[in-house]
Length: 302
Image: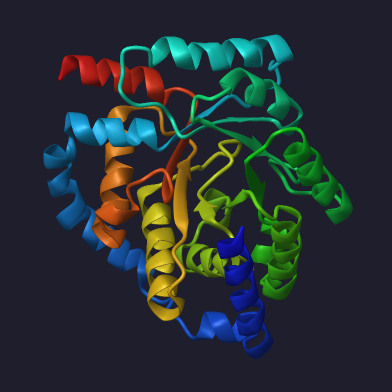
């Protein structure tokens, strides 16, 4: 808590002397798409075979947010989902970082996990569209935390981001950061809707500056979700912000990550830009409902 208060105070001091437009202007946002394409094709693709190891697959499991977010979810199905985690990982020496569910199931997950060391995570604040009143977003976050959520995933107001209303996006995130005091806040950029590396980079900077603990690619509920180029742009933003302000922020890849090969690719991109020190549950997450089964099969095959 002391660490959070210190970083929050630092952020307030920074915000008093720098507007969001000034913040964005202080970073180089041009040419990211070309840089990403070149680096992914010429460097990262060549590293993938070397990165496909048992230890790296275990890293992906340890950094996983094991997720169920379907209209068919019920209290009973969520209980069974939590139990399935214990069954599937019984013979492993590693478990996912968190289970992620709708906010009304936070207490179900919390009670089911007990002393497992796996965190209770929820999506909130009008997920997945973020199209509702700010007061309702605040209320949903508060209720989720009160019933057991230790990590909260929210979505930026995408329409405002596309309309370049950066100050409004920032102020909303600051408000929700304050509501989520004391828990991990993951801000979903919905990168497939932004659909531009420079805009993704700017959205990442805004979220980080507002106090996000993680920036996240996608809700998994739109046509285009996580892509290598989007993850590359987000990792670049994290690196640039860290070098300028010394603040270390995590990255979560979500949306379409269902195979071990895909997970290893994203792990390689993050490691390539940010270094192996980022490949821990504290700074790297993979949001997925299907990856665990494939990762276990891959480990058995190796």
